[in-house]
Amino acid sequence: MAQSEQIHEVQVDQHVPIPMRDGTRLSAEVYRPQAAGKWPVIVARDGYDPSLAFPVEFGTFFSQRGYVYVINNTRGTYQSEGLFFPMIDDAWGENRDGYDTIEWAAHQPWSNGKVGMYGFSYTAFTQYLAASTRPPSLKACVPFFGSSVREIVFQQGVHRLKEHRGWAVYMAVEGLQHVGTTNEEKAIYRPALDKAQQAIESWFQHLPLKDFPPLADLAPWYFEHVSHPPGDPWWRQTDARTMFDQIDVPMLHVGGWYDLYLNGTLDHYLGIVAQGRSESCRNAQRLVVGPWHHEDAATPPPPLDFGRDAIIDFKETALRWFDYWLKGQNNGVPADPKVRLFLMGENRWLEMDQWPPADVTYTPIYLRQGTGKSEESLNNGCLTFNLPSAAEQPDSYAYDPENPIPFSEVDQQALEGGLLTYTSAPLHEPIVVIGPVKAVLYASSSAPDTDWLVRLCDVLPDGRSIRVCDGVVRARYRTSLASEAFMQPSEVYQFAIDMTATAQTFLAGHRIRVDVTSSNFPWLDRNLNTGGPFGEEAVGQVAINTIFHDATRPSHVVLPVRR
Image 1 (cartoon, one colour):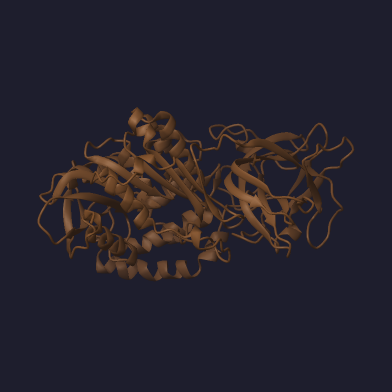
Image 2 (cartoon, rainbow, N blue to C red):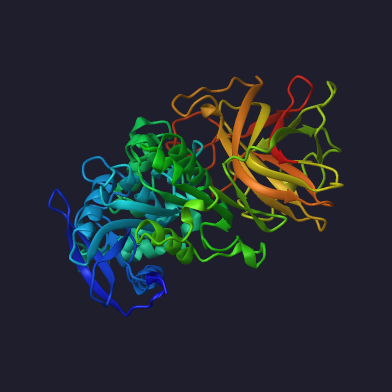
């Protein structure tokens, strides 16, 4: 029996202080086998309550199987000293603290000197940052659903309002449990925060965005985040995408087709494969992407069901990775495929040598003129693989930031009466789409700035319109996040829109649909259409937005089609 298959009794050491190089002490819960010897260590660094079910589950699971599991709270959270300022490395932050924590763990009496990192979301962000500092004892990482802090705040230049503001309120509530918080402070702040959580939907409506009274005295980091536009060089300090050439550790990257940080997962995998510090590091990257979403990482978003094969045990997946890299078990990890993807529609796993796959043809599918407005659509447009003719008329709609299109994670059918839709005829045979998807729109607006959101959907025979992937561009950032370029009224511009990626088979009898709109609220903040500074205005204006699809301005979506 392999050592990791032996089930050990577990000892838990609570509130273990870990000294940082500046004298700050960070707290850790240490789960370790109740047996003699030295063990490899797995470190998870986050800002959440270490007594929650999932860290306890992880700590128990790995320590039972012959690892020490260290749950390390980041600065300013729970028993850790210092100021909570998530994923910022201006003086003492995630990069340096990650390095110091890993080296501390490597030199404890119960450690054999080999350290791995594991974790989801926040604990994936901290892995990428720590890895960029190249701690000598760090031998393997398993980041799930992670990216950079800028991607928490912005999606392709558009503010992730619901995610960022909702998370900020949650972390402010959690912050009241910090060891440095007095009972008087808890009594003052807790009632207001409870009210803010209960009324969070109304706070999503609140303008201007940079004004958020419930956090005024509690979360300076929140206001610092929203004070920097997406192209500000300030974000580089915690963006591992600028540090790929410094990373030199095997990583198993895990993402979800419905995860809000999918682009970050793919970017980190591709970046390290291309730029990692050593050939051994570049060869030791692996990617797994399934039909999962962020809220419950092991499952698809309800009500989608892709069958039993879609559900995997992340702990077991990581255990095999660590058994090879930290214990030296000959379990075949180096021979694993570089990439494993779950193909939705056919509901099976694919193995391939690279991402994106080499055997796809990037094929445009064109937005075409339709039959006009109905209850189901503003235009009932068509979608074909044939170029439009010169005679086709554009489609226009009014986008009012006072009445934005709401967010729906899965089925878009109920919303599409307020959208432009472009739908193919029922498919005679399946179409397999695997890889990055992008849109090219030729469009104009009456406003100097607006948003363009494009969504790819799988329309089932019963009429449900299931989101496959989507993307957005804020018009002012159409050429670069680093510079603003406003539109002239009625002038036609070309907009390239990253729609992330997918692995989807559109089955025979299904239809392919492309939705076009200008809001996805409150998932994304409303563009007020004025061209004013981000987050500083409270009043917007209606924009008349127009999509062109003729022979000289053929708006389309590029699908990576696998024959």
